Image (cartoon, rainbow over all chains, first blue to last red; front, side):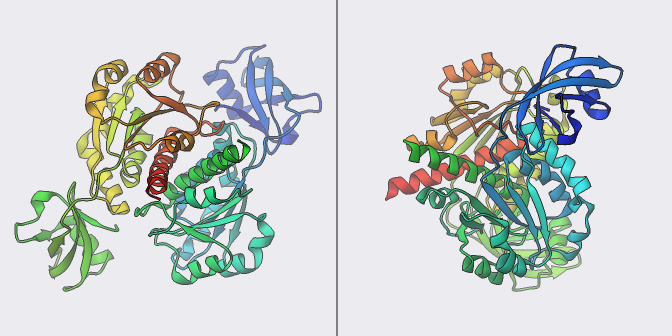
Amino acid sequence: VNLLLFEPDEVRPDGTVTLTGPRARHLLSVLNVEPAQSVRVGLLDGPLGTAAVLSTSAGEVTLGCAFDPSAPPPSPIDLLLALPRPKVLRRLWSQLAALGVGRIMLTNAARVERNYFDTHVLSAPVFRPLLVEGLQQAKDTRLPVVSVHRQFRILVEDDLDGLVQPGLRLVAHPGRHESLLAVVGQGKPGRVLIAIGPEGGWNAFELGLLESRGFITVAMGRRTLRTDTACVALLALAHDALAHSTSRSAT
Amino acid sequence: VNLLLFEPDEVRPDGTVTLTGPRARHLLSVLNVEPAQSVRVGLLDGPLGTAAVLSTSAGEVTLGCAFDPSAPPPSPIDLLLALPRPKVLRRLWSQLAALGVGRIMLTNAARVERNYFDTHVLSAPVFRPLLVEGLQQAKDTRLPVVSVHRQFRILVEDDLDGLVQPGLRLVAHPGRHESLLAVVGQGKPGRVLIAIGPEGGWNAFELGLLESRGFITVAMGRRTLRTDTACVALLALAHDALAHSTSRSAT
């Protein structure tokens, strides 16, 4: 791990925290920490910081933390994702958190198998540690907000405007469409919402509904990508395009 | 599969091919093909095409293929990748082929564990079917050319110029560097070679050697990504940036 993340209530008012269990073992056995050494830390959904090792004993480490005055900004990108196969979703959680997503809305679609919704990979006790793992990898503290929507139409027609802030809306679909870069480059969007369909793609009704709610269709060449590959690829593109459009508008 | 790929010697001079085994079972049991139906096909490293189902019987399908006059262009992107953990590499093969890579050079580096080179995931009988799987997903025929280099310095100093065609050279490293988009957008590179380091990063010697051979350091924000996430993210960025710079220069 490149960063050790704490729940806010783990840290005492004086900034000390005593770790036992896997995180203490990681510090003691993998990082071989000793008193006075410093490690990078962060509070979930709070600031990053530095901690000094105050004491170590068998299976226990006490740290004294100093946190930055403010938390890193939340990701400017949200994701509307047709629920993938449980095996794929399990692999995705940490990657999504590592790349940086503000909100992850998992939705039904015509080509999503109904039993995908029964998986325990959709339960917070399973996915939250995987999200934290991704944040620790990427040195971020901002947990994506996860919501599950069993009815695509109700999500898109009724709930979406309340869930995400206004911004550019893109839907990924193979074909002769503009590239994400071209679309993001045309404006200076504050936020980007990306909709990624199921393995078999969105159907015509779903695409039409998304387009009627302001989504612009983008493609990555002629290639059809697996859901997990497409998620990573599109999030990376959106992040870099936003950073690039901001740096250009600043010059 | 979105495309059925054949080895060139599987197809008879009259364009017919008789399939048995897993591909025949896939056609019969998953796609439920019947005579006169057509399926998308391709020749490995050759053209795409269409095939008509001529006959089916228990476990056997005969197709009559008509191929395009020319093969799709090879990917304009090459990859120099510090050898990842076998488990990560196994997951990567199909994703790399699906995203499109011309040549994959796997190399040693200071932070690569020596025993990673002993894995069977590095043997063609294991990785070739995984590459084909990725091509079938992405509807491409161009197999990445794979080479393994146990000595980083010899690869970069002596062999690299003979292995890849001239083009833009980028090395990914976390930090305050330019984004890939900014660098690719400055020119009209015909090809891009991307170097991606091991989980712990390139060391100073390796970065220096790459820079001395013309590599420009790029970053994706402050984030440190896992090797597999970084590969997918950077390949997607490079593809889109090349397509975007080509479309801009055409207008």
